[in-house]
Structure formats: structure tokens, C-alpha cells
Image 1: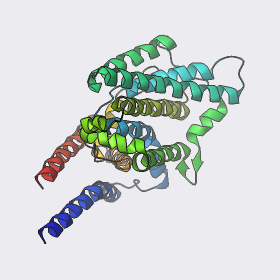
Image 2: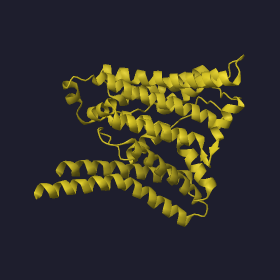
Image 3: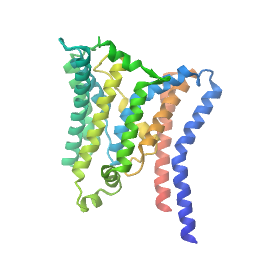
Image 4: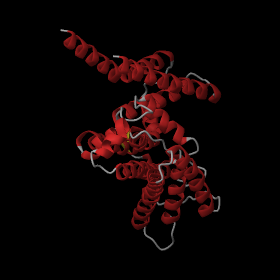
Length: 327
């Protein structure tokens, strides 16, 4: 009887943990719908979906890194570097529009992947905290972006590339659908593959994974590589949306991505969380920012409120962890 009650209590807590983020998002939507006039208009909903796209893409990659107990502070700078590389490629003389676009996508995504690979290799091989390695990469990638572009913004992209950034399908931005596709792929990897099980396993007990004969080094490399890859994809979306490749793009984007992951319920200690939670976290940040603008709050107040939400999310995460252990 005691065991049954304990299992029922644990199942109830798990349900509350999963539903809590959705309830918070629903509460925000209801609040801003009541307090503002234009929140639920089709144009504003489209704006929200467009605005959260880049953060969601970065958050997908960040989820893998945080699940293994790491952190990546360099994704904003990697985005800028990948955008500059792609911008250089797309404006090469003598290329047709299609060739230029394909070359830019390949170059940008590859640049992000290489940066992520370096982060993973240095952190895993030398057992250096990822905080330090990615902090270094933050400066390296930003400096490289400025050097390659000569600190100049790159623009004048093919028309078809610009149209991709503003295209709508039944009122939904095409770039947001791309982000959703990445969420779906990440969900499948984390829940239906050996790689996903190893990612969670390393976050829960790295030594146990090593003693079981699995290469912790390889899976950490993959996690950071995926984070760099998504930064490269986000760079392409950024270029398509704004029609520029700027070496100062992405400043602070890493903090927003980390916030989306943590607010979505992924533990900073690793081993617990989901990419669906990251999706919800990105929505909460986007809805909160949009609603506060409609309420007429200043940039300073919006930053303060977003910071408070992040701190509350981290405190709740620690509370859930302690409560779960006590139970």
C-alpha cells in the first residue's frame, strides 16, 4: 500500500512538472489577451512566431549541451561568425542566385559545426569546464567575424534568399516551421535513439556511462557539435530575416537560448529535461517580451522582468531536484 501511494505521488509530481510550463504559458497568453488590445491579432501572432525562431533554433542545440551538464556561452558569437562566412559566400562574384544561396547555407552551417566541434573536443579531451572553453570561443568567433568582414556589414543578397526569410504558409512564418522541424528531429534523437539515451545518461551519471564501456568523449563531442550546427542554421535564418550579415550580430543571444532551455525545465545539472520544454520556454520568453512591449514598458523594465523569470525558473528547478531526492 505504501509503495503504491509513493508511486502515485511521484507520478502526480511528474505530471505537475511537465504541465507547469504549459500552464505558465497559458497564463501569460490569457493575461496579455485581457490587458492589451492587439495581442491575439493574426499579425501579432505572426510577429511572435518570427521573433522566437532564432532563439528556438539556438535553444534546440543548447538543450543537448545542458543535458550533459555543460553550457555553451559562444553560440551568439558563432552565429555572427557563421553569418559573415555565409555572407561572404553568397556575395561571391560569378555565381548564379541558386548556387550562391546553396554555397552560403553550406558555408554558414559548416562554420557553426566546426566551432561546436572545437568546443566539444577541447572541453571533453582536456576535461576543462565547458564554461571556460566556450567563453574563449565567444571571443575567438566574435573576433574572427570582425576580422573576416573587416568590421563591415554584408548585404545585397539574392531576392529568393530574402523571400525565404519573410515567407508565410497559412500565416505561419516559414522560418518558424523550420525551427519546429528541428525540434521534431531533436525530440526523435533524444527519445528514440542510443545517442539520446547516452546524452541523458552522461548528464545523470557520467562515470556509470564510462564504466559501461561507452565513449563519453564522443557523445560530448556530438552534443557540442549539434549546438554549433544549430548556431550555423540560426545564422542563415538571421540573414534571411534581416537581409544582412553583421559581425556584431547575436550579442546576448546565448543568454536568451540558455534562458529558454532552463525556463523549459531542463536542469542545469544535466540529465533531466526535454526539447519540448525548450520550445515552451522559447514561447514564454517571446510572449513575455511581446506582451510587455504592448503594455508600453521600457526596455529596462523588460530586461528586469525577464531576468526575474529566469531566476524563478532556476530556483524552481533546484527545488524540484531537492524535493525529488527527499521523496
